[in-house]
Length: 123
Image (cartoon, rainbow, N blue to C red):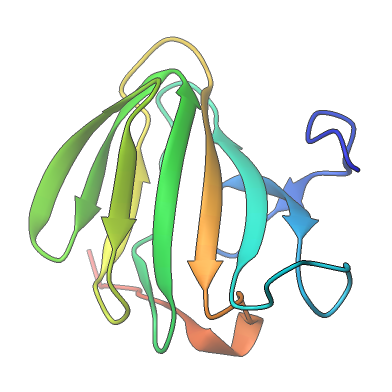
């Protein structure tokens, strides 16, 4: 058992702060087809546009507000919202509020750094 608020968090490649809560390579999971992370974005912050080549991602919002941009569409985020992003879809999240946007990330197949592609554009 783990407490997501007691895990060591770090800055991920896309700019959000996260802690891996469960991954089949490091944890005994009943099913090995996913990984789970706790993440947050500070007020008025955002993640870098990116996509996962072979994994789909589902976000479950715990607190705060924001906008998910994924696959050319947008979705309002607030506590209780569950939003899915298919593999290959460009995505980023903007925290449009004055409090931390906190969420869980479920990735299937499990997250792998080699699967994530950060998108950089010339301004």
